[in-house]
Amino acid sequence: MALAARAGISSRHLGFLEVARAAPSRDMVMRLAAALDIPLRQQNTLLLAAGFAPVWRESRFDAPELAQVRGAIDFFQTWAARS
Image (cartoon, rainbow, N blue to C red; front, side, top):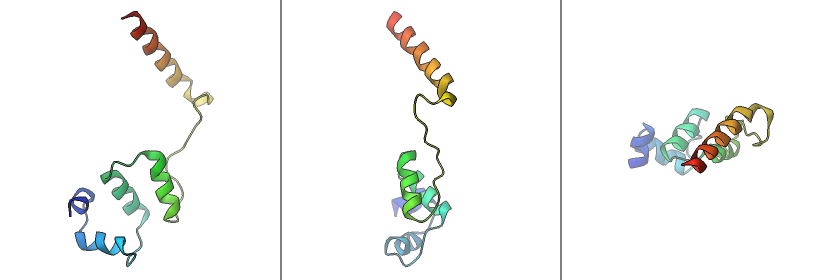
């Protein structure tokens, strides 16, 4: 009942999902994953298992689009080393 409340659905509907009497929508998979605090990578796995495309893009840390992130991490590491 607590999970149903956190996901904003009825416990009856959650029960139907649990026993495969109802199939979850993409939105429902995302709501349940959020209610369970499931990390993004595992949310993609759940979506794939339910027959949906992944939502979250996964990039390598050395990808060009993450250059600003790496710069920020370098800055904080340098700052922390000085403290």
